[in-house]
Image (cartoon, rainbow, N blue to C red; front, side):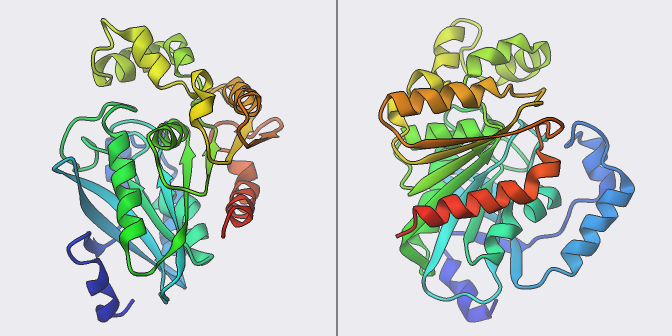
Amino acid sequence: MSAGRITDFQGILSMARFVPHTLEHLTEKRVFPNPLPPMAYHKMIQDYGALDGVEVWDITYESDGLVITGIMALPAVLGEAHKAVVYNRGGSREYGKLTLLNVMRSMVPFAKEGYLVFASNYRGNAGSEGVEEFGGADVRDVLRLLAIARALPCFDGKNAFMVGHSRGGMMTELAIKQGAEVNAAVAIAGIGDARKLVEYPNILNNVLMPLVPGFATKRQEALDARSAVLWPEAIRVPLLLLHGDNDKDVHVSDSITLDEAIKASGGVSELVIYPGGSRHALIRSWDDVVARSLAWMGRYSV
């Protein structure tokens, strides 16, 4: 990226070259459900070092007066008419925060296809100011980042999309409900019915109770507000739902029920279920996940 092009972002984003976290940091901070094997980590570092055609930046931006951290992946050569996509990460706190794994799996493939790709850590996480709410006011961090992407001179002014994984699927659905200006969206193993999360003691005790405002006294209200299956009429952009039938973290029924509800309410959705072994991260099916996501966004581009 040329120095002249970088000035296009000044005043909207603060930028610094993306430097991958160390393996020790990722292990100490419990960013992944299981320790990342050193061999896998060093392979990612090697692949990132050989990356061609894409530039990756750490970013900070303002949302509700808070400084929020994130990542931006851009085509190395920018024109004046690029599509944009906001990727919404999963997890909470340090677990699931934006790392090289997110960059290589969920951002670079779209940047290679010419998209401007943006992702937020959400407030309260990874150096961001504020307090995380797991689908509360932090949804505005997603909406703000989308607005920034749409304001950049290299955005084509017409084609913006959203992709979310796990908790990020819920964030995507909430952003759409709150008026996100996107042509279409993709939810990958997304939380469509947050009411089911109370069945997991670890999530109930370590995520919902400490993070969701007023959860102790307004549990049902908070869960309903985060469950798109209860308000499918608000999903008025085409939504692609991708889910593994062996998902132990977010049951596939979340996507099945949401797909049925959106269609019954007159909306547009498509459901793809990956059989056996795919689990929550859809590792074995990831190339197909990316291909279907690109095709979906292509279908709804103008």
